[in-house]
Length: 109
Image (tube, rainbow, N blue to C red; front, side):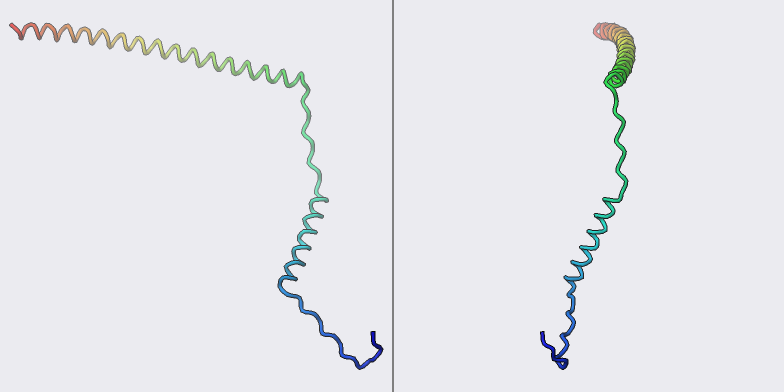
């Protein structure tokens, strides 16, 4: 270090755009870190006892079973209805075939 007062003053360094980007990134990172540390912690969910869990599981199983039975009853009703409709159609087809056979016999003579 010189004590000469007439020495030239060093020029100020110019910060490049990359330097400004690094500074902005550091400030942003510091802000996010402070925000994360200062935010309130999320509340832990309430724990469910084993008895409550089994009770809910049993209730869900009962609902599923009831829904399953309802679907089976509906399928059974639809099946009976379909069989009745097929039986009616079979009766009509048989009557039509016998009438057609009589017409065929008349036309052969």
